[in-house]
Image: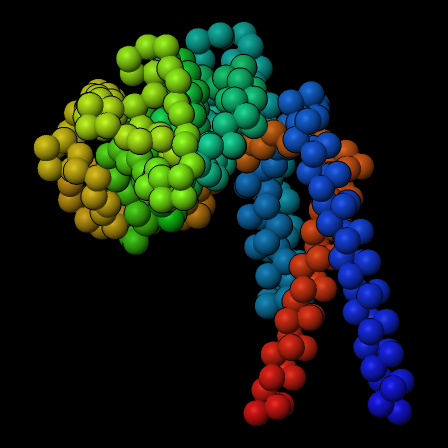
Length: 358
């Protein structure tokens, strides 16, 4: 019996090893293919009415909570009101066509999402979304960016900020909602808004610049390993990871950081002149309530509350540029999910065995 269990355990270990290797190969192939083809993949706009979503949620809740007769009566009343509103909109549309200067009946709010990482990877879909929205958004409408980002590379977030500036240049009101964090490069984007709305405990600010890198020169020297850095241009390479850093190079690196910080402060000062830069441009962060006190934001609210209220007086649409998933993408997603499931089960069994042993 013991020999059988030992043989079975060995067989199971080999099987898991083979399956794991296959999954890793699939993940690697999918990741490489996705990375190589991402720029060439076609995408499409996914647009949803937030007003309709809220109405569907309300109806689903009422259908269960209310008495069936009461619900039917309310449903008939709503249908009657909708017909009247549709008739009024049709009449207003005819008036608008005959009188180009006539005011539209309701404003439109276009909602975009930006979930930033260190490289501002969400920049690519956001560019397409902004381009699409600007084909019809007017000064009477509004663009809302639900922004979440702790910051990242200066040039990436500089370009992301420039994309938001396109909205400003067209005269379309811009609002940025922050539920969790908009710091450093994230705040660089947020400060372009005509209005910044943040949750009470969201994190904002960090108007500063940071750079850090390890240096292995002494370790290499200890083992008699030479590493040479050859440059053409006095400041082509100021600090290195492997070579010996000089005080002159270090000072130049700090000067570059200070210059970047100055540009950051000038940028914030241009779009939020009400901010006391001497007080806030220290690299510190503030929670939402404190950020309001130092004028980093304009209003305390969650994005859910802000957009729900907007639905009362406007037609609110979420706009998302989606990339079509290739076979490699689907295989990659499937393999990742499978790996997560297997690892979770394996870890759970190990933990249970450890607890039972105790």
